[in-house]
Length: 291
Length: 176
Image (tube, rainbow over all chains, first blue to last red; front, side, top):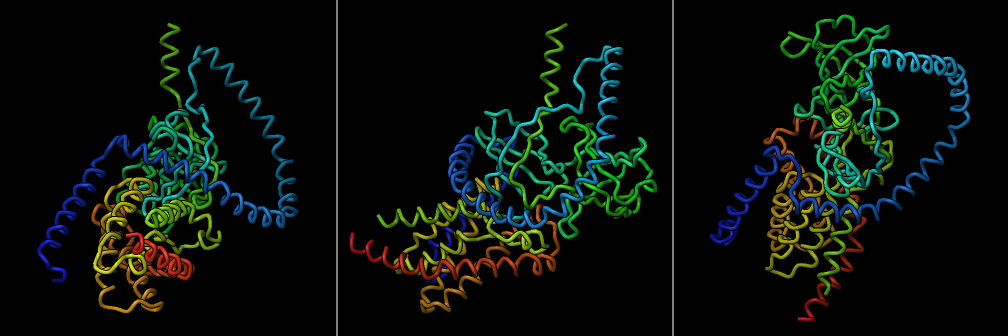
């Protein structure tokens, strides 16, 4: 009897082997989910949406009450900011015109790397397991979502699409990034000066993203410098705000320096996101057709 | 028939896990403490204690199936919850033969089960190279809040579930 009963031991060993194989198979860098998994995700996603809608409206109601209390102060602050924006607005308009004209004179009509096609989506569930930090959104392949697209909120970048199914897709949040999800990024110092590097992974204990500085100009990097995606990885468009520099430290071998970056977007409280479709391939096709 | 009710409740709790963070107060979510909902496991424990007949092991199969569902939908690494939940429920069923069935024992079993399950899952993540925090950090910021949050859920579920599960079990026995 007990645990070392023969039959039980046999079942235990069989299930252990099954368990190891399953983990091995699913870790083995799959491109996308298998068909049955996609079907399950879509079905569950439908019922998740059913439950998520009332719950989020209730929690939003309480948030709204809190917002009301702050409205007066916020209004004052915003009015001050608005005054300074008007000038900037005019300037941007002028620069855009300039840019357009210059491009035309250069006969460079292809799409800018800053352009993208936005796909609006709503978060329908969040992985309860907090190691991977994934959320599920209610847009899938049917709506044009593909793997590795960047996902942003109004504040800035929050993550990227890790897997897709027909009607839902899974977003890997920045807070769950590991060494397999690097972003080519730049630290912008103002006055056209930039430092190139890679956002490597998220440090869960310190709540910061690690940014490896590639060109040796670490002394230029200051606190509160803005970190933007550089668009050089070919996946994300240029100019998505990722975070702000918190500190610069030497890396563990003392050869290069790392910048610790505080993400601007709050990944704990997201409801609506925008999937960034940097449809460069389609423009290439159009260009081929034209010529 | 009453098995269908149990499956339905399990499925609803499983869906609710996905919006668990929306239900928590924002201040708690934004702090460094990490709450991992293991609500499905909590219900499985109640099911093992109050619904399962003596000597049978059906709940282990329930645990494996719903664990696989969690893996497919929330984790995308198959097998982690499937194996962990099945193992924990098996241990609870073994313990059931030794201890008395009452409120205090249920809570103690709940604490042990959540603790063991979470440590086991963390260990798997550590082996496959995803969990990167150190053990002391894990114990302070993850395991303690996780156990507390799940026991609160178990306390809320206990009176309802214990009542209905016993009723369903008796009705199930009659129908055979």
